[in-house]
Image (cartoon, rainbow, N blue to C red; front, side):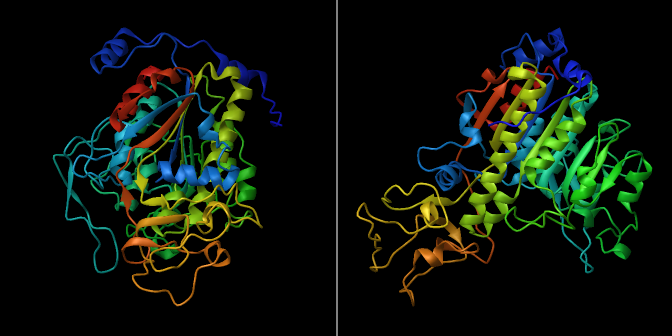
Length: 481
């Protein structure tokens, strides 16, 4: 049963306000970009991004959580498309280039954060003390982002992630940088009026920012990574932001004041291992952000990232990756339910859910149907078994897992010293086998298309196979930005 969510009359009135027809200039721009115009703009936009959540990962997570014939939240979205993910200079994109394409409509070189076409970074890196070096851009100018366009129109704006808020994906919504590693510079772009502030965010900056990454906001003296001795959290507090760092403080946040919640020095912990008293869950952060943003009479733009899917996949931690994909879908479902309560039928709200790139996770063999994973059933994270329940054997006569990776740290070129068992391969931190050996934690992205689902106002614009840059154009048109 869905939870009953009560909203104030003022909040409901703000959300239900009549949207207007996009101005002629917007319509003409949309026509020039080959995008159909709309008669009724989406007043609110929520963009969900599962970092690294390729089709195979989605499929495995569905089986893991609900069985082969079950559904995840993203499966239930009525409109869908496939998205091409290649970057400007690579067949396989990184998160910066892909998310920047979504946010700006510009193809990017890998590593570049929301800059003009062809921008490249010259000699990024660190000095002897581990500080980020100043990076020089070639052919580089800031490219306007969807979040900046929303802010320009008077919408409230927010960013939620369970990685560092200065990581490539969230940074691409609000910052511009020659290289994604310049995270202390990216953090500085968030402080209104401060050195390095991104003036395109207006005089007030973001309205909501939740995630990890406190180290990039604090000086060395306080255990952070800032060499300029600035305490950006203190500066944000002085600018009227409510700054919180644990779940109790987070729960106490109320509409009416911009909020920054940083719950880890770097990235937050996997959902299955986080301390609930220290780190709120991704679904809670998504719904709290909606609560804080929704009263704005001009609507809001919110980006929510499930970033730890990518981290688990890079580490070839199959079980953790599937758990994080389920958490992402729980956040998506929670946001849909909250918005349905505030905006029945999502008549004024567009929700888009997709991924930035694939990984090399694969489902092996001719496994019999497993059903969902339970304490007594290994499911999709177990061994490949035949219809009669016996393990399927590889060319060496040994069992192997349903989930594997194209690249990764765990490769057995010869005979194993012991046969694999379901007990071994279903452990929380078991690293699945890979075809190509890499260093620890260095499984790679994949170059396949990713899935996109959409619901709500103007969701029907999303169809077919589209480039990631076109997603920008479609959201821009749907919202009349």
